[in-house]
Length: 261
Image 1 (tube, rainbow, N blue to C red):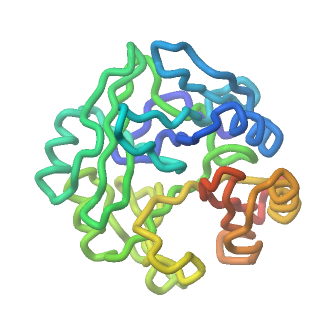
Image 2 (image 1 turned 180 degrees about the vertical axis):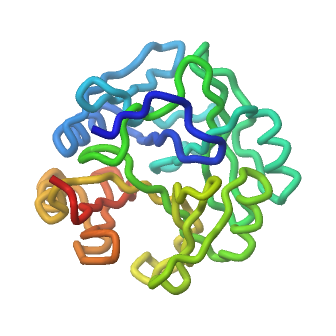
């Protein structure tokens, strides 16, 4: 199994979490869909739930809270990019046209985090590991397998992520207009213009892809559990995929690669 045992290289997607109005309902939904084990966490961390797959941390789910008089955070999956110095990364984000949504914060002894938006408005997190480096399992059914930036301006986004986070765009043979986001020589994510299947006015955003062993059957299970289908299952270069939303509206993608079990 593709278990991760060391910290991720800076710039690499290392963790994803879901902000949602009904945390327990989300925990139940993803337990049934992916087999995750998770429960509401300690109060000092806002009840943050670290979900596990076969005993290994795979993603987080937290309740959407906001200061009195402020709007609640959106229901959304957030991608976190690894950093070895959150403060320096925060400065680089601001220096290259990004904006800080939540400044650097210590999360106990587990790590340091911030949330930012790129120049086109796509929101992402940054994680500097201390005791916790991120997802302990990737690229297997029920786990994170790809992170993709859908943006209104690929040229500007490519410059920003290269300058601020060391993620460099590279063209992909056979996929005109699609870019791999690379750390060194390794593709760790993707980037493309906002796709046509999304509703008009959809802002730039990062999409979380979860691996599944059978895309069609998982989509059927999702619909039966109250989720919705944004783009039905279809075959593409990397496998068979679908874009979906959970019952509370958080969008994500499912993909079964040709070599899935």
